[in-house]
Length: 441
Image 1 (tube, rainbow, N blue to C red):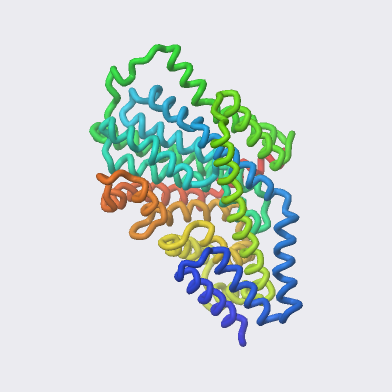
Image 2: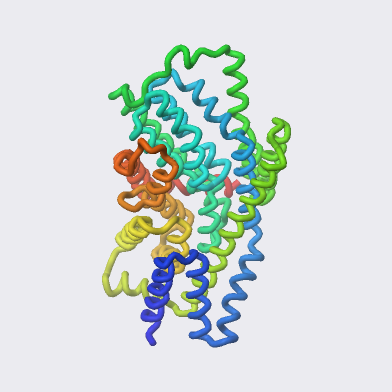
């Protein structure tokens, strides 16, 4: 049987299993193991799975995964993240759209604490959304703000998704995280600029808080500022030694987890319940990602053995005569299409065995491409009619916000993200400058 037919059968079998509601790692791993056994027999098939498991166990940077997830859950469960919003509420309420702008700032900091978009969505929907609606903000504006801001969780370091990409693409996690800093902050700044311009043109979208709401002694404002800056201090304590080369990435992640734990203890918020919830959630998320990575490695090993990547490269470049940039754009469009019914990890695991080697063969930088992939999945998350974040927002939003409002709210932010994606594609240095600078030191 031709290898192209085998590859097609593997993909179609995997997609069929996913459509039946099977877990992502189960569908991918099952197809990989069955294909390996059928192609290479008992010994060869078992060796592929075993080698993938050993590669996962020996990958030292994977230790960063539970450390950063634990740090995020400690800061969230101990309500230290709530202090951030109170800080933005007091200090930015005097601006038109100030609370919406502060919410974007909150989302950036939540992303730097957790690395998961779901965490930002949950905190934004439970803390920021009720306050924004109560203060007279337009419901479509604030719904879009929370969805767009939460998407930064998979781009701003420490992004858990980029850890998965690093494992599959065999690229340094530290370089990928640093590559996401400038595009992530640039996208956040573009969101802020859009909110400020819209609220200036139409003040009713984001009214200024009344004097009564903003009335507070300066000492209390400074206290809130110190409390709100605590997560920033934790992030700086963690990242500054790594950027300066004093610690490794794993050591920095341990410093971040320890700093978050000490902060919760010193503020008197580290209860038994908080600790148990943080540990339980950390174990759950970490194990899920490890199973996904293991399945992806096994699936990729089968593709490497088939030589399917070279066959697809030949199809695009020799038979269809497409340019490298045209192939890259088609890849990005396929991510947006898949994002209507899959999450980011599933998309990456399904296509990584094909796309990542092909991108390298076409001469593109794999660090840069990791950022392109991440931004594209952010767009896919929020593209109607079936974007992943749209239905997550609907589940968390109050009854007065319907699906029509959610669709309408996200359109301008998707356009802003498309502009950001275009800028990173046109100017690769936006993603590659910081990691090149840090690692050159």
